[in-house]
Every structure is written in C-alpha cells, then in structure tokens.
Image (cartoon, rainbow, N blue to C red; front, side, top):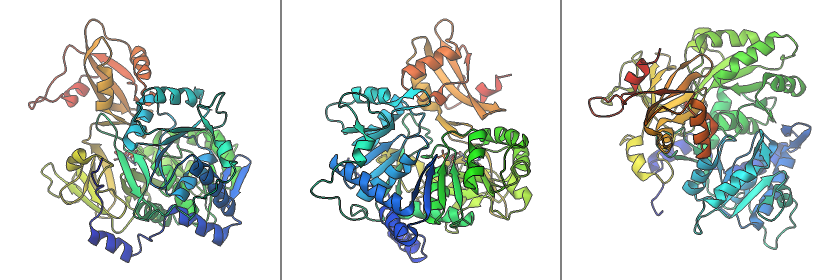
Length: 543
Ligand code: J2J
C-alpha cells in the first residue's frame, strides 16, 4: 500500500490558504482553542447529560489517554459505529486529540460493510454500542473478527455500554477512567498536520465495494464553516442531530461541527421520530435541524397535532434525496420555520438554498454551492459544458471536494477528470442564479430516501443465492421513499420472494436497507447494443 494519496495541486492549496478557506488548524487544536475561549458554554447535550466546551475538551483528553494506552496513535484508523449519543462526539474528538482518524460507519451497517471498512481502512479498532435498535453489535463484532485473518489490522473492539463477560471487548467506561500511563500522548492533536486526513467517510458507492473518502482537517473544517456561514450560525445556535450523526450532512453541513465552530450547542436525538424531536426542540430551544425527505410528511403530521411549541425552530434543512416540491412548499408553514434544501455529498460539494432566497428557488431547486470557490461544470456525454437550463452531468472541484478516493488508484482514474473534477454521476440543470436542480442520475445507484444503494454490490450478493442465475437492481419512483429498489431476477425454477431474498442478504451480512423492496422474475435480462444490462428497458416493464 505504498501508493500516495491524490490531493490538491500545490497552487490550489496555496490559494485556499491565502484566501483563508484553509486555516491551518487541526480539529484537536480547535477544541483546545474553543475550551480556552468559551469554556463555560454548553457544547453538547444528550438527555440529561451535558458538557461545556471545557468539559468536552477535558473528556477528549481522558478518552485519548485511554486510547493511547491501547496503543492507538497518530494516523491510526478507528471505525466508529455509534448511534446518536454524545459518545460519538466525545470519541471523535478524543481520536483527533491523538491525530488518529475516525472512520464513520452507519448504525445500520452489518458484517459485510463493517468488515469492508476495517479492511479498506486497515483499522486498528472499532467502537460500537452494546445494543442498539434491538441489535447486538457485540455479536456483529464477533462475526467481523471471525472473518479476520492473522495478519489483519483489527486489534481492539471498544464497547459503549456493557462489554459483556470475558476479555473480548474493551469497555469505553474503563477507557476513560484508565489510570494515566507513564508517557502521555502529549500535544493537542498528536502532532497531526492540518493537511493530514482527519476522517474517512464512506461513499454512497457505485461499485461492488464502497470507497473511502479522505477528508483533511483543512478541508473538512472549511466545509463546516462555509455551511455555518450560509446558515448564519452563531453562539445562540442549538442544533438537533436527528439523522445518523456520522452522516456527513448531520456532522458537518453545518451540523455538529459547524455548530461547535460557531460556539453553539449540539443536542442529539436518540431517534428521528417527530415526537422525540419536538420534545427536544421545546426543552432545549432547538433552532436548527436537518432531515431527509421521507421524514418530512411525519414531521408535518405531528406538527399539525398542535401539541408542541416549536417557536425556537428557525431553520429546517432537507437533503440527501430529492424533496418533492409540494412538500417543500408545505413544510415551512407547517413547522413555522425557514426551509433550506441541501444537495450534498460525502465527497465534498455542498449546495444549499439561501435563507433569503425567494420561495420558488427554495422549493424548486436544490440550492447553490456553499463556497465561492466551488467550481461547478454541467457537461454533456462528451464532457462539453452545456448552457444553463440544459441537463447534464455535474462535475466539481474545489476547496473541500476530494481529489481521489482513499487507496483506490484504479477507480480514481475514471472517477475524476484529468483536470481533477469529481464526476458526481448526478444529472442537474443550472439556473442563471447558480442554483442547481437535480433531475436524474447516471451512476448505478438507488437513492432510497437518502440511503444509497450501489446496484452492483447488491447484484453480486444476489448471485450467491442458489436459485438466482442473473440479477439487476433498479430504482423506481416511490411515494414514501422517493425511490424503491426492484430486483429483476433470472432463476432456475421459481424465484425466491422478496422476504427470502432479504433473509439471504441479511445472512450474507448486508445492511437491511439494501434488500430489494420488490422482486420480479424475468426469463432473461435485456441487453443494450453494447451488451450491458438495459435497466431502462427493465423499468419500463413495471406497471
Ligand atoms: C437529490 N439528490 C440528492 C438532494 C444528495 C448534505 C446533504 C446530502 C448528503 C448526501 C450529504 C440530494 N436532492 N437534495 O453528504 O452533506 C444525492 C446525490 C448525491 C448523493 C450523495 C450532505 N442530496 N443527493 O446525501 O454522500 O445523488 O451525501 O450525489 O450520502 O446523494 O450522497 P451522500
């Protein structure tokens, strides 16, 4: 693994620094700085537990000391699979304090995804809850471990909650109360450089194995700050983390990091139900939150019950998948808040409607880039720019958009243009105002209400079922999810039903949201003239 990570050209780096986008500070040092400047303000709230900035800083030190005792040091990758609990944030900053690199996993990930993350990142540790949503993550980690070879990287599994009997797992609580080791980890950030990788995010994926996205301290801090500026965050901001906290949207657009940078307060919601969220809005005076489109109707229904005081809620962001225009128009009045559409990606570029945009732009577009230095190209199939108003593929590069996936040199050759633009695979129209309208997608991915499914990944797993000889997964419009997944199967004998397919994929270790919503048996898969599966033709066969 000696290949070097693709990064920005020197001239661009110098420019991003010169104009002040990149401030040259690590997250570990930032936390130290916040604690010194506004130590007494509340930074983080989880139920009746709260941490001031000074306490967050001290807690990060404590946990970092425990992690250091386990041998975790600068540059080491650590997979975090935690639900929306304060521990995610505490641990994230503890890793930053060591210069170690958190790898963001989602709570719904299972053996296949976690195993892949561990291998792709060569992670030395995983941090999981004991149980969450009626699922035992310790069992999952036993399975992940069982699949590891003797030379594999994984050394420790840290459990938040009950680590169970035996010495398999390290207790998070024991880590933070560990007696100091002789040599401390020192420094604010383990000596990490601002241009180092600060975290790894998982791409939505279009290939069999999802790619890792390296984000540096410089670029990710700018990502959060640019979004915080667009949302006019300040020390009075109270952000409610409703979507999974490790999701780029929730964590940094502006989310958790943007709020902390502005000196505000982050509140974590243990579940995304409007009842839980509205109670927290009332109790904590929440001013900002972010949702995916499938949550919107539930939130509007519950608000209409009239039993909640949502007076503090000023802005509600919606993103991750296309928000129907009708919902966009109704949501603001229903919650008494300003709606902001967000079209973002873990790879970088974040588009947001502005708080003072006219209603038509807010409701019918997915916003414009957060930074004046985000470069956006809309191109035809030959890679030539198209005029505004014409649909084409969105290409982008800029101060917080990756130049290459992590250790994926071959894939990088096609995922980027020779000029370093990331090919998003999204089809958009650009308006003269710079706002983008997402009209489609050319990547082989299904967007199920914001949760991304790489068709190829699921198709490969479907083929492991003994009755299935060929498979194609396509997305079709769906009232509830925006898109649902349909598996077209060629089988020997009769096709397994959707439930059996789901059970098979679960057995194979895939996250639940990747199971097809529907199964359709076909005698053969239609092919295009170049011999690829003709997914458009398949979709047309549906009623
Ligand atoms: C249509 N499609 C959208 C939108 C994302 C903020 C918001 C979202 C993400 C995210 C994110 C969309 N309308 N409003 O990381 O920080 C689709 C596009 C895009 C892909 C990226 C953030 N918002 N999409 O969703 O990495 O296809 O990030 O390329 O999960 O989601 O997915 P992901």
